Length: 108
Image 1 (tube, helix red, strand yellow):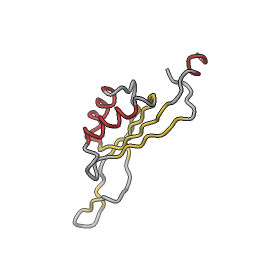
Image 2: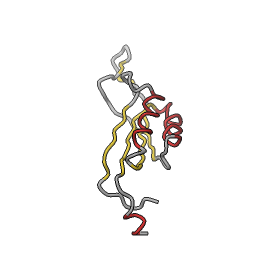
Image 3: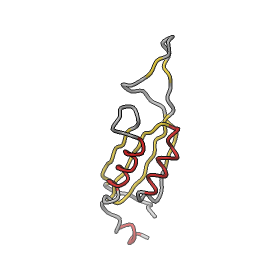
């Protein structure tokens, strides 16, 4: 097992924040583009594009955070697939962050 894990190098962690209604779409895009697994969970937060009701209360937009760890060469394909599907060139449609992984333990 350690031998196999030692060969896993040059990984990227992709984090996506999307509207909850788009969760299944994003998971499908990620898997079709090469992600072998996706971890996701509900989230909430605040940002520059918050919307307010007439009485001044904050409207909560339900979000999902999705994570996957993939080989570096697969990451651009996943980012493009999700970006195109969600229309991330328009404000308020989501967020993607790609990070280098220094060390990963327990990958299959």
